[in-house]
Image 1 (cartoon, rainbow, N blue to C red):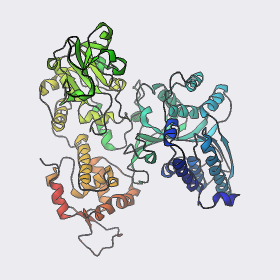
Image 2: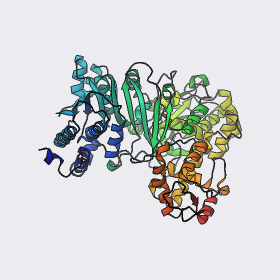
Image 3: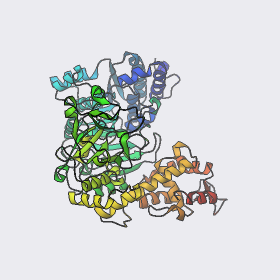
Length: 640
């Protein structure tokens, strides 16, 4: 039987990957999306399995929502490579979908064969039942089934407040709104002391009010050891067209300080050129943060952003302001909406009314109605006329900023009341408008590149909630008013706005440690690579940094002053770290060479060994230089 199981496949992991592709071909994609089923690609599974800490004599693995068994297979492969493999390895795998259970049993049988070859006594149990129901029974009864390890790719879908699953979770003290966080909560409770969990989940649990209870309970029980980010939202489950910002984390069930946390990021699934840094626990979750937001900063540049924002200490209460979500849900208020400005109508403001930092209303030929009746039935949906700062709750992928703010100026609409649609957040002063200078200063701060870069450290999705805006610290009221007075009614471009924030709020006119010019320069380099026609795999941050190193372009150096130094890969990586705060692992030089430098050569963007063409390309002394014609093109990049 073992020969039949292994036939055609070198490893159980290869078998699981064949099953994953077969499932993708056979099963309806809409059904899998409805169930939140996104099966784990092999590169993700291998990386997750590599995070566990060997060795243990007896290993009891929990794989909840196991799918075809890709994670269990990767774990078994990793355990079999341990220098001191365990004497026993047992796997408990839950899978509710009967269409996947057969695949899962075959994968685990292949795992048994592999363990036999490594001298490990292997056993496995497949439970074709709902994990939430089964785990809740165990947790509720406060009995056994403690696991030493858990590996997890849980279902990604929301859970209605009145559902049976939600009620069952509440009965065992778990309050959460998504299946993935429910799985993590239950798995955490099923681990024994010092038990390890490695999971891939959406990053959305790191902030927001919906996951506050989950964050608190998880952080009380578990200590992060490793968190890994992906540079793009479509990398982890690209085969399933999932646009979701995911993280992989390794955590240990223990009490007390767990020591520093390794935070890493990479450009794609097989990219060994990871940025990596160690952070103290208090930098990941600030001790004085009542919301327990998890702030993931993988590089020195991000740390500088956080340090800058740390200079601001005012809360919204200190400013005398509040932020609320727009009251008008248009599909629930259709009877009050108006296409034309009738006598009883006042402006209804949507995100598409933002233009040049202000609200431009009405929008001709809009599919949305521009007006809402000011009548007894809609009175609670409206606010008094005044100056308000509005922030979009959702940003599109085309927008360069996550936080997009605009000012509602009543002088531009001349109406006694106004309605803000539900896709907007609005800042107000006791339910009314605020002073014009305060509004202009606040909008400038919210639209700054500094605020946007900081916001992305704890917000892993495109939604900007009022809770997130309340959690921020702001400059003082007098400082914001001074900025607003300087702005006046001018429309500032991003560069001028960022300079104003740096000079007036941070009191820095010239500062080489300013992280924002570095961030902008990396983004510019990525756009330059796209304009030059480089493949999408070479339009990432690693490739942008490589281009900047080969041009000797520091954050403050104009493109027109680009040069063409001779540089080896090690020198390039030193340049990344020194000038852009991007520290890659030293042993990833070959990845930079193989996944960026080779493609630059193929595109005739750079030349190898121009100082000594006879030098072998695989020599440790190999150097590279920007090609002369490309240098001239790039010197013109960014010029008006």
